[in-house]
Length: 255
Length: 255
Image (cartoon, rainbow over all chains, first blue to last red; front, side, top):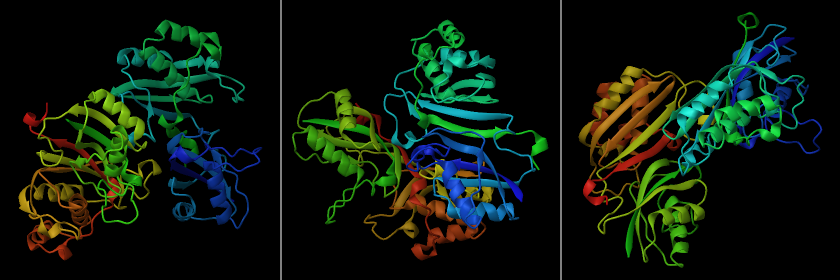
C-alpha cells in the first residue's frame, strides 16, 4: 500500500461541494466523487476512499485543496498526477502529487487552512468576475470593515455562527489571521484558522458587510459574537466569492 | 434623436465574437446582436444599429468595450443602463452610459485601444483561470519575452500578421505601448495601439512565446516582421487569454 497527498484546484461553480452525500438517492456532482471515480478507474474498479482537508460547500472554489488516500500498488507521483488529470473533468485539476507518511490524513493532520473571500461592491459587476467574486453593490466603510475583520482574531467560541447541518462537537476556533483590504471597489478578505464551522467565512463576511454599510456597529458585532444565537447574526454572503487557498501541515508529516 | 456612448464588459466564452455575421443563415450568438436585440425592445421594435470600438473575436473578453448608437427618444443614461442590464444576458453588462456628441462613433472616434493577454505557463492550469487565461506549459525566458514585446513598438507595417478574413486597406499600425511582464508562472502582456489587425494580439503573443521558448531569436522575429509573409510567423495563442481592457478618445468628443 502507498499513501498519497495531492493538491487540487477546482472551479466550484458546477459542483455541489466537496463531499459525497451518502444518503442522497440521486448522485450529486461532487469533487470528492469525481476524484474517487477517477481513482477507482486507476485501481481496477476498487473503491479508494479520499479525505479532503476542507469540506467546501456548493459553489466554493479551491486553489490549494489537499486530499489524501491509499492506493494498493506503487505508482510514481508524477504518473499519478498525469493519470488523474487525464480522467478528471476539466473543472478539477491536480496541481501536485506526493508520497505521504503512513499516518498522514489531509484533514486531521492539517494545522491551518487559509480561505479568501472576494466581494465586488461597484454598482455593476463585470461578467468576467461573476464566477469568483460575490457582489453587494454600494460603497463600504473600508476602515470599519478592516476593524471588524481584525476584531474576530484569536481563539473564540463561534457558536453564534453555527448553521443548521453543522455536526461539530466544539464551536471554538482559533483565527490566527483575519485581514480585510480593498482594491478599488473590491473587498479582499483572508482568514486562516485551525478549523472552520460550516459557512463560517461567508457568515463572517456577511457581518463585515453589515458593519461596512453602517447597519451594525463594531460593538453590536462583538455582542452578536458573544450571544451564541444565530438569529442575531447577519446573513451570509454568496458562496461564489469563496476560495480555499491553501492548507498548512507540520513539516514532520510532509515527506 | 439622442446619441449614446456605453461601456461594456463581457465574458466572451459563450459568444461568437462581437460582430453580427450578416451573411450567416443561422444566427450566431454575438455581443452586438444581444445589444441590438435589447435596444430594439427599448425602442418599440425598431432596429438600433450599434457600433463597437473593437470587433473582438469569438472567445475574447472585454472589461472596457465601448459602443455607440442613437435612440429615437430621450432617456436618461442612468435609466438606459438599468434597462439594458435588465434585458441583456448575464454574460454582458453595461458598466456606464453617457450622452454623446452628435458626431461620436465608438470605433472611428477612438484614439487607441488597450488589450491585455494573460498566459499561464505552469504545468497544470488551475480551473479557476481557465476562462480568462491561455495555457502553454513550460517556462519561458522572461527577459527574452520582454525584449520581444518591446521590439515591436512604434509605427510599423504588420502585413506579416495579416490573417485570412482581414479586409483592411492598410496594415500599418502604431503601437504606443507593448509591455510583457511575469507574475510567477503567468505572462501578462499589454498592448495599446491606434488599431489592430484581426488576431493581431494573439499572433504577437504567439511569436513572443516562440522567442521565450528559444524556438525563435529576436533577430528572426525582426525578419519575420519585415517579411510580410504570414507563413513565416508562429501560430497565434488561444482567444480565451485576451481581453479588451479599454478605449481612449479625445476629450473633445466626450461630453
